[in-house]
Length: 231
Figure 1 (tube, rainbow, N blue to C red):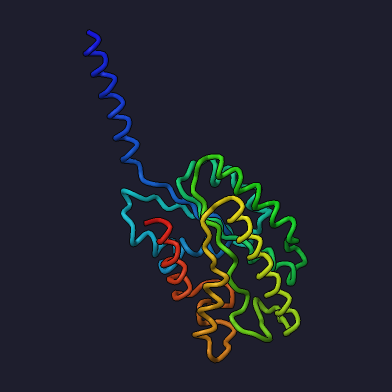
Figure 2 (tube, rainbow, N blue to C red; figure 1 turned 60 degrees about the vertical axis):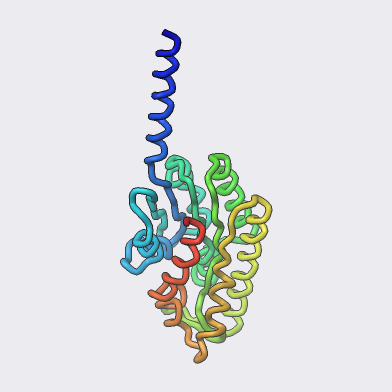
């Protein structure tokens, strides 16, 4: 009788393990309009990644909302990330935290940015989820004057914005090291790519459509980097 009970329990355990093995790995992309477009558009980086993965093994979930800053993520990461209990989370935020400061006066100061990311990272790590932190990319692909959304920026303002993007990127790098997460240094990747390929110092058109939002090449560049953390 004991042997029969033991056999039944073993079969149940094996069955449960097989059921768990059959569940696809859940991957969440948390961010702003860049992430939103990455799933909405056929050539977006989430769409490109999805095309190269088996749907049976991976479930990709885009959680990007246009205009979001780190303060916005704080209001929704519990429902958009924690409640989903993902295996892997890409956090890609910071462009609006810098850009909106110079356009609307509603950006994020560096302390709020760091504090907000700390809270999000800490809670996600408590789930046991793997995290990939992404540094913010670019606002304008050129050096010099720039215009985004009819908001003209002179050389001095552009230098300040680029300085902020570098500082915010340093925060992401520091937190990645501190919390032992994976790091995708998109800021460095984009700047290196532009240094080699933007020979005419164009404000857009190399990796972006408008200096911020990604074109096909920009999406491919990110997709090629992100998939390394998935495979």
